[in-house]
Image (cartoon, rainbow over all chains, first blue to last red; front, side, top):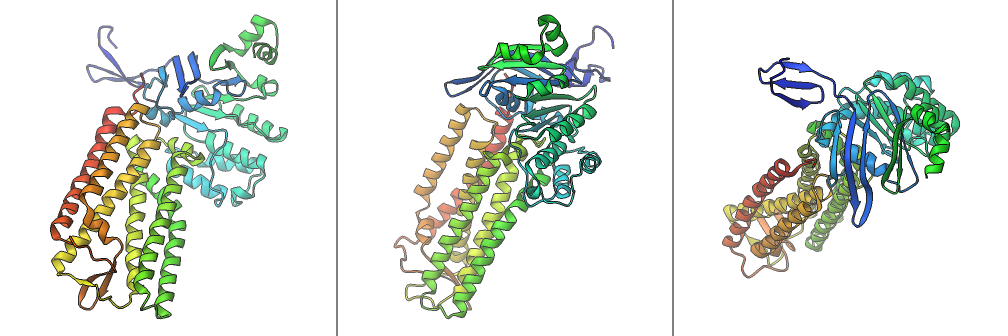
Length: 256
Length: 244
């Protein structure tokens, strides 16, 4: 590409030059956020939050209840229209369009009780383009989740695991998981962690909000700590350990 | 993608509406078989009222689930434009509103009964205008209500924009109430199909039962429906999700 050509960013990985030549470039970060502010009436849920999430990492979003974790997740999932600041996902500022690249597992995920896993897979593949059916089937078989069993018949742990697998099997670059380990037994949590490690790739980023920091610490490449809607720190886990000489969980406990 | 969402939503609505329609038709057939001739008119009105209430209940319940419940988060995460998110909700509700209207008519016809002494016989043209006016007006009102519910719940518009949208619908409803009194007066009556043609039967025949009122209603509905559609297109193009 010539240096004096005007460049217009159209999509995260596509650049159009005036001569109509299409070249592909990589957005440097998965998420870029600057000065994000969200208010619910008079209550400020997020205040001046700035961070950037690199590609191909598992990032832990931690903080007390009410610190703004879920609000941040919902904002990145394009479900909060009224906010201040700048946010870019895969280079896109239109969060409505960025949904193609974002998968969101909320704290209380929706599922149709009367459907079995196979029917739910069909429903997901109908609604989400590029849905990886085979991946769900393979993972379900591996963890002993029956495809023909109704979701309502599953135990809490098995249901959480099934929904977790169903959501992360979307063709998405950014996976937002809002407290996926809440109320889940240790065996299922381990299964989820195994799936995460296997699924993360240089193109796929996971942002996971959790309170189980002690257990999940080894999983996270990066930690974002929120407190009362403010960003306390956004730092690589290794750098945090090196800088403070303490375990991440300890640093977080002190900062909270 | 809109088709897929529409298919999903129609699939979710079929069961509750199917039960409602089956119950309604079974009950009206039972009344007919039990020889409900004399009380037919009253039963017909009661059925129409209950079906309207049932249909509205199901639709409001679905709007709540798909706009504010856990299902809403799931549906909003589907990668579609805002237009598809609005359209699939409104269209599916509209489909079942029309079906409910049809089932109401069939139920009324099944219950039947002899036309009362106040039955008003209409020429085919007048009947078509009255009937068309009613159907269009109800469709317009339903479309507006469904649009209003969707637009106010969708995470697309900011609070100030939502206030403007609300103002538009309030004005539109007010205009409807003011201009279409003929339609409202027809509500307590029952439509009866006999071998001689269409009849409106009921205890109250409005004094100002004129063609001009119905024509005004038809005209208003014909204007309101495209205005609603244009408004949606304008709002989507102008405001949808612009990051500051």
